[in-house]
Length: 226
Image (cartoon, rainbow, N blue to C red; front, side):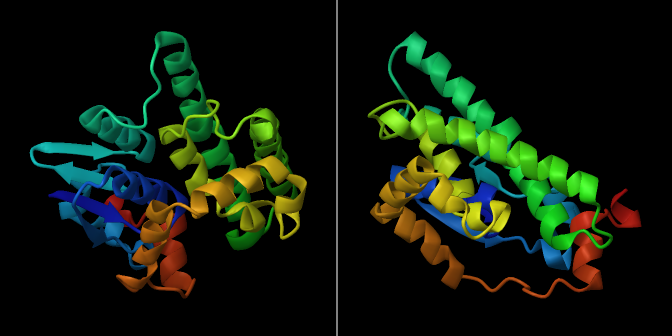
């Protein structure tokens, strides 16, 4: 059985969706970043980057959510497009999520909601880049059901993890200005696998308070982990 180290943030949730879509048996193992559990030596032995998600599949360990999606798709032969041209598109859009949508959305959230000293330039910079990336994706989805066309793939799972958070990233009215992203999100939300992934919220309790201890663990590495 696959051991799946996770919390409820976008990157682990895209892996949860993938595991559910593929029908792979897995054991969810909570890692609470607000308690500093990502810095436990037993965990950093699996993922030196001290982030979630990570999976352990027998003698194989994989960290980084997009690497995990590729690994699971390769393991099962499912949710991958056929043919080299569309395979190139898949890799391009998957990396677009990995290096654009995710990082810029994450930094936008940090500076808008959590940075203790604000920072107008950083907030504007990351909000602009996050919005620019989401606009590109919205345009891509305007004339197709899924990112690669009419076939649902791991790219859509990668998008779903972050699309759930668009109002928190860009503002409450953002979904209305990204109608094709919203349509895509609604279609995936209707899938039983997405509902099963969301049900992980009831499996374990994560710390909700963003107190000084949580800020220390989440936004600056403790001395022992430096």
